[in-house]
Length: 196
Image 1 (spheres, rainbow, N blue to C red):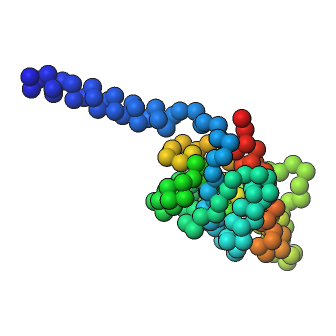
Image 2 (image 1 turned 90 degrees about the horizontal axis):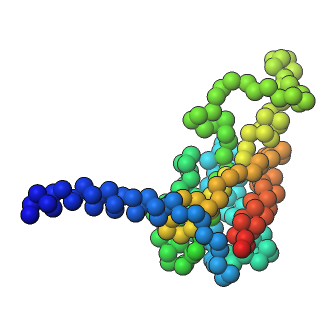
Image 3 (image 1 turned 135 degrees about the horizontal axis):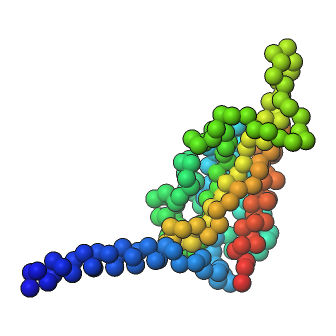
């Protein structure tokens, strides 16, 4: 009898692992009519100062204006490169009975670990000034280096329903520069959230 149970133990372990993987590999389920979306505070993983709470408030208000059942959260989006739900996000989303959780991060792709330090070729754009006597062309570089990465999870799932980004242009280096990116994110999320 012992040999029989030892032989079946690996089979049960494999079946349990496959069941866990299958749960995360299910296709994203469409939102229910009254599904609740909870929005975590925007995380700023860039070197550019930003008012994360104001960006989050703009995102929540724009989603409400688009008729999404949305609520702000007190927990923050992770600062890690790979955006996943933190234990604080998970606990708060359960407490607030959220169906979906939206995590948002302001990033600089050039600061990512996999970013290459090689210059890129851009056709039709002015080349940056490399002459030490000339003015620095930091506005263009700063403008093109920021993006808002957002990931929406169905509560209890590890695989995101939405995982994408929009450019975030900061010309004057003030928080208001990022608000249009919040509007673009809200538009994308509302479109996905209200799919039938």
